[in-house]
Image 1 (cartoon, rainbow, N blue to C red):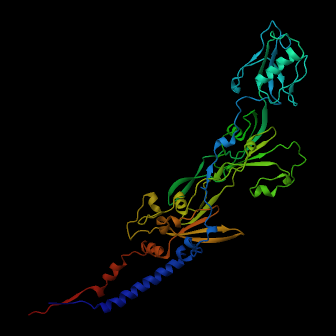
Image 2: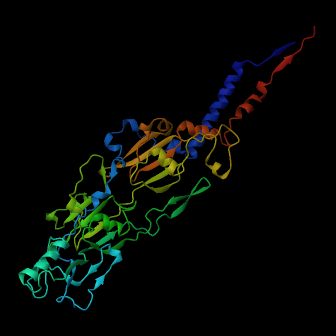
Image 3: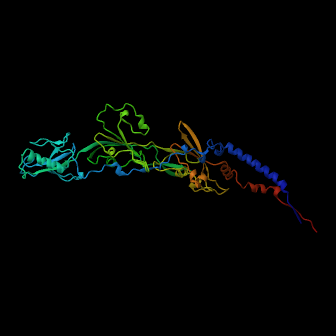
Length: 458
């Protein structure tokens, strides 16, 4: 018995012909259906490793939070009197009747000891006016020193009261205050609110962008030695939030509106504190600085005086955009830490190493035929450049997952587009119901592949 099988020379031309036609049909299908792997307008970008350093973007993690003790003044060991203080003075027989106890005032919220006596303010010239004696200068003195001068004025200078029989008490009835206005732009009525995001049937949430802002303003009367930036912030809502800049501006009270500018100083937009030439006296207090950098303000710069305005500006909403196989949308950039391209794709719930599944897997459907869907690896980052131009940066997602140097930092207004490469697109099309890999079985079932036999009897 002999078995005759058709020669491979006869099968190969047929196989090549069929495969060639299948390839042509596949290519036509890709073009007709507008495959993004073929028609992607930003596919030819500059690889990350060949990108100039000035286009790599700036890191947001270079700054360290400023120590809070630099934002407050150190109170002295002894309270020093200045104009605006109100003393409590009791002089038996002069300020107070012998038959009556001196008035006592206790203010629990102030943290001061009980005050005794009648109110006597420290005037603008640093003196106090008392009956029958010349004005007593108490500016720059402690309470004990002021009481000694008052006693001397009544027992020695004028001899109104016999020395040794005087009953004179001087206390601090009300400390001087500085009235400042705190204006904040970091309040948001919709803080923490979210909006639904749909990706392949999966419904998630994302932070609201450009939510309704609710600026706040409050007048504060800060007691002496508490009239500083830290106290102004803590009494008006705390340190600036994530939607505020890492700085505080202090608009100083110049005592006259004649120098108020009629146009916006250019130095404000450039990030520099305006000077006297701009008609504005502003102190800029940064809240984050690079490690080792010298603090750019003096200790007296954080002290506030009456009429000053403390301004907490909001930062411009910095976002990046997504497209392609990622859900098209707009997402916020973190303020104080870096977000690289791989983390950004994960943030928007993009596909990462999920070959064998497609986006419909979020609804519980899995691929049961073919070799599955390859993970898309072609990332194009469209970045704006100074002067109104743009550059397209090519990132190989598979390489970026292995090499941190490929994970370019996301910058404001970047557009991240995720697409399949040509090879991934071909594999995906073969895996669909239209182009299954089981076409080989059809070829092998053809009549030319069926063996024929011839039996010869002995």
